[in-house]
Image 1: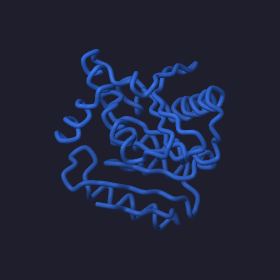
Image 2: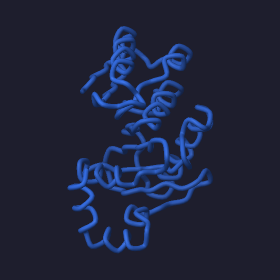
Image 3: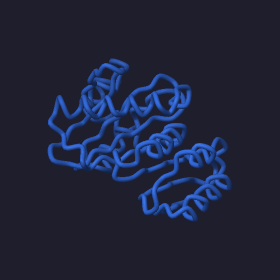
Length: 196
């Protein structure tokens, strides 16, 4: 992580922004009726909507995704301190409004949108995808796990693509719980790949 932060802070645009105490401008902050989000638009590309974890927007992760997914449009909504403080219905509407705003402002094709999240943002991503799976091509969860009670009331469809990436040292989302939840989703027919 330190190496990545050192690289990030060495980039001229980021160096200036770090001095200004903001990273958002490097990714073009946009406003919608529901708040703000950061976007790096790549024409005619898949869209990845990335939900931050507890504690804020963690633009550092979006900077990393920019390097890992250079051919993707990256959208990073900011939701205060925690996605789980709001209802799934509110979060789903927030993402719908954000995507509408993105399409209106950039002409982005919304047929190839992936939903991703880290930690609590990953849990919110599971909730949102379960409410409207047709809106997303699939789900990527990093250091997170679904709320199984939510999955019982709004389940992901059979064959729905999910990538769960998790470490072994996470005390917020213990690996044993995540592994058990991944097994339940696979048993329900979700096309889930679990990477430790």
